[in-house]
Image (tube, rainbow, N blue to C red):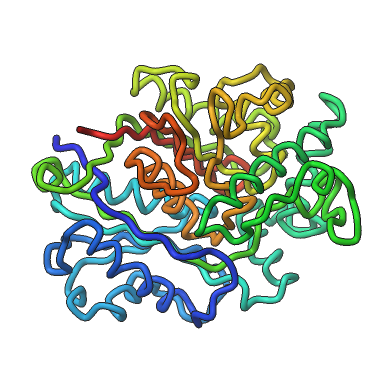
Length: 389
């Protein structure tokens, strides 16, 4: 089996885009990614497209839209992937399987979403499609209401951790202020994030606006190649390990605070990589809500269950801590265009490993973890990336 490498990437600015839809968003990043990888369109063997949609746009058949922006790709096989908020990582894993099964030598992964043209109330309803509608569709506040319930349950079991959630939000906004691709490039500070106000109202349960990721537009691309092609590439970022784990969709049928699928994905990826979580230089993790990042600290093994708050209180995951988490600002500050998110997280990690993260660059970046999840830790993808000489 050949192993796939990341040899190039591109990333749009996340936020409110003037682009009319995913077709334009994908066209914006495709050519720069191919140029970055030193690859011509004719060299591409497969297109792997991650778009959630589910009602954000009337136009679907998203896989066919990539070639609309590049006529040279009109005959290149293209497939669309969807796995809730882990849609981008699903497309990446599909492309990795394609190369490692020797079905092709070069694959392009495109993730995109156009969300801001949809009214906020409708956005909440669309995102509820990533929950178990039969039981959870009436959650007040849309998908934020689902995680509001999770935060309430966590606080009931382990005490009110609102200030710890505010620390996570403040950390990620401080990091996002250094990211030129981020939706919000402003350090909001702990006091603002910790204090409900007219500008930072409660959204669902104990969650404030600063505890919730952003409704964003954007796109990101990864170019993957087999080992032989990558040998001549200007950069090579390897997947030292990758793992996927699922959990039951209905929250009523599991302990939703356990994030068991996330725990299994992390355990499998770290075991395959032959490292512990504290051996990583950085992590990009799925902070769709600050409560998710805190529970993920527990799932990845940084703290026992119920003690994730200690990780942020002790400063471990700060930019200047021993294990920076979300140095890009995370979904909280960078933004969360659903289909683009998993691809974006891998791009952010690859930039750190490549030493080309600009103002975001960490002093040490040898081994990176990436965790992207769909729904309430239902679809879970974990990657361990490393730079090759």
